[in-house]
Image (cartoon, rainbow over all chains, first blue to last red; front, side):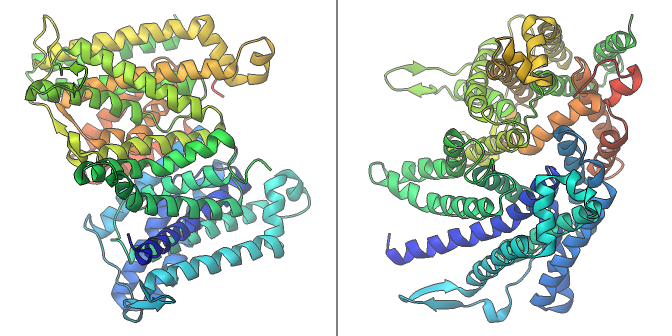
Length: 305
Length: 327
């Protein structure tokens, strides 16, 4: 394997890690502030991707498509928060799992109803469809590079939002003591709706960004949701920093494992069984990573504060 | 008699009565449908030990269901192609015998539950849910990427496996076999819940500190419950594979795990017959709604949402009152 190919794969790993971060950040905020496990977060990812594909189909503009993804996912998030989710904050986790599982069924089948079962395609904008040349003569798709940049900017913005703004202070206060901040006059149910809509918007953006690389279809959100859970378990629930570190770890492990493990086994096996065993193990690699983290830090790398 | 006991008796009798009716009407498809409900019930009865009694919300029980299914698939596949399962210093032949397959399914899913449980039970609450979900998904992707047994396409078995003295291809006889197993497991679970082990497990759900103070280890109690629970669900997986004569990675899918929880909550959490009621209701809904609309799951979702938000205690809870507390 050439170094150039390796760097390319590292960048791919970063790109998938960054999109995972967009999912995981919302999930971890929602859990941290409201104590809610939201299985329907993957549906919001799907809503974002479908909204983007539909708007891109009508207008041909990718920027409008991204805006539509953010707006549609935030609106969907706000609606389900006000209709369903807010009745679940005081319930046990089992009820939350069940109700959000029911929401997945409703969202998935509803989307199938409206858009049909065939995947939609969201095209990468023409200006970004070519490769860029990175230092060292590496050619890399400019769209994927853009995803990395957008993701890092959002991560930075989110850290600033949590650390510096008034709403960020309220979110952090809500994480440590919700009765107290309600007593201090913060409209807690408005705060919850905002946090939920923020998480939903991030998920919708991730769905739209990834939708242009993969196809936009029903059920696209759940595999990402489960990966985001792995990210949160590794990073620690409620920690945005943990979500970022966990997401990058998972993205890199997943991508590099798929490339390197078959090569590694190829050193002492015949090629076909090396590919088989290597790729089977690679599909398990992030879960093995999760198990290792759990053995040494049961509350995740940055959890348990 | 308590209302719940009457209801349980009615639920228990509903399956064989419905199967006998289907036989009288010469509707073998209905018998297969009822068998499916019974197998789902068995899988959820297994999960209910961990979830209802132990308070362990496992969203990864499809792992054990799938392991049971693949135990059947792999053994029967080797038997029908006349190739050994393992052919090195030790030679292991495939088999078409149900009891042997069941034993393999139970042991292998119990071992998997031991490993997953030992790791996942280090945590609790929402971590536990996410971790069990993730481990379940690990098996799913492994099954897809392992081409020896069909990969994504799964494995077909041409003839249902044998049970001594029965013609298992006859729907009624296969149903009787499944129902006998379900009855035995229900009887055992009922005893287990009243035995010292079950009482201690239930106490550990309600107040782990107190259980620890009297000298019992909640971790060990939960691990044992998780292993038994996984083994029962694994057995159900082997039966499900035999019912369809087909195994595929979808048995490992997380939707499967979600549906098991749905059965339990639809029926009533922590009640012995809750999973039975829930599985019957779900299969009935599927049968009635799927001809009405291609998107019948949307109605299931809506019903489920209403049950969770407004009818706490599930079907049995609504009909028999809240005699058993859940929490």
